[in-house]
Image (cartoon, rainbow, N blue to C red; front, side, top):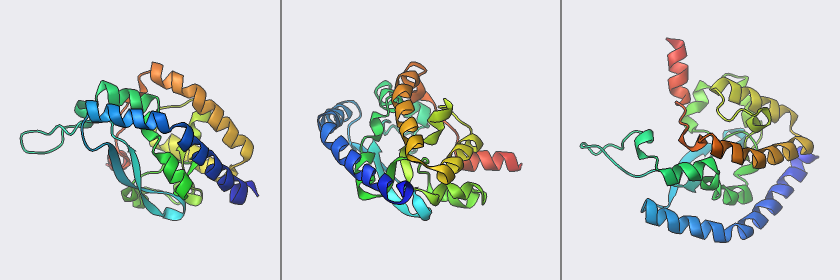
Amino acid sequence: MYRNYIKRILDIGCSFLGSIICLPILILIIILIRINLGKPIFFKQQRVSKNNRIFTMYKFRTMTQAKDGEGNLLPTELRLTRFGSFLRSTSLDELPELIHILKGDLSIVGPRPLLPEYIPLYTEYEMQRHKVRGGLLPPEVLHGNFTPTWEQQFEYEVYYANHVTFLMDMKIVATSLKGIFKRNSMNYGNYIRGSLSEDRNHKSV
């Protein structure tokens, strides 16, 4: 009952209320991004959610558009600003995802929505993470692991997809709120993990 009906009702109610409450913060962040980073305000990218459904996800942009002499974007670590790092550490860059929750692309709690190009790289076991909608708040926070390996992340997410309950979701929400302070103190915004493609290619060598 909770998994199939109540969870979605709570997602709609909480995301709608959250969008209204956070509106002044959203407007302020838009202004600050325009001042600090210029245009565009939003970063958009295709991601995958429940049943492998692909959607275009929007987040606040956290990096500059700096390019090298050949017109190619510089590496992530060279484009991430102090302001952008703060947005990431506090998860403020993810506030636009409230709209995706309202639309049904995402849930408040669920596996991280990842790139479509990763689908062929998952094992059959790991594909179980797509039995539920991707989420704004990931299951890994319950384990106090803010920088998991890909294998650890998938382990947490598959377990969640197979055991989702109201109590577990509430624990993840509460732990996430506490974790924001820890993430900010550990400079989480500067954490950059290699892609799954790089990880799997490295291990296959």
